[in-house]
View 1 (cartoon, rainbow, N blue to C red):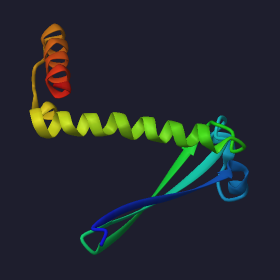
View 2: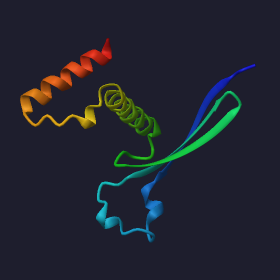
View 3: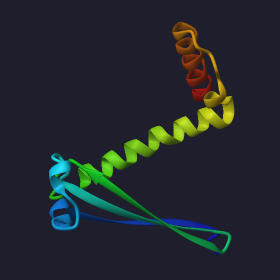
View 4: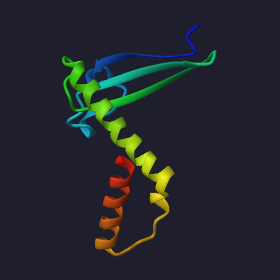
Length: 112
């Protein structure tokens, strides 16, 4: 019996579908809208999460949009780890050099 699982689906639309609903003149480079649906199951408990993204990438090539989303969440997960493990957001160092050195030390420690 499988105790966990993960699946996702993606829909990418041309931003023109918003014409008449939103003043697109305020969003000159808006080209596409993506909707990601993530479904996970762990120990019999199923959860679904829906995320929406806006992008300047053309809707004709969804693989580029999906790659950008994966890159974004890869960076976000690193920041989450730095905050949880090292309380990075609570650090009140104001000296620029010290802050940069601490940042490098935290990232190096995380990689170990």
